Image (tube, rainbow, N blue to C red; front, side):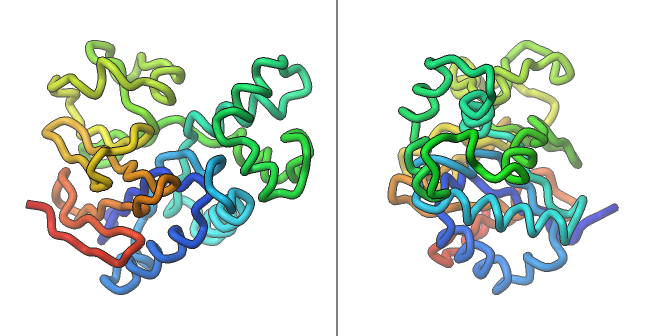
Length: 231
């Protein structure tokens, strides 16, 4: 299926109000109801409303099916480990120290294993990658020099270097987040696009809008309502 628009969204981190504002901004330019949305992970932790974010994404996915894709981020991965009955103390404390306390507060529970079963099941089922016309969507990046089919989930979820410094041609534009951009603007390079603009640190929640014919984005839009053509 050829979509009129594809909208890739950066790290939400419990920022529900910014997520709704971003959807409103997409609607103003006609890129909401008929678009395919791809979220690149990190829906929970740090921000105040992880429960609302997950609930909203689950509802959207139920209503839109294959038009709404939510990938796994490293924070979902940490939460899965922390909520597992066989978890270690280190699993629990690593997640808690990386913003998990805010997630517990948003759900009104004291232990991640007490999150609603349907929310935990949905989080566990998140894939780690998605590909479309000339683009690869992952949370953190890929390992330079390793074929895409052989990339490990650990790298897809956690890598920073040497990925961020590499100018290697990966055969696809890698669309990712995970590492907040210092400028709080999307960072477009010839081989990758970083959409983590630090929503949970005071920056906006950002998205890239792709047309049906080009690998590179045509617009950037964010939760402040700013819409910018891509040079």
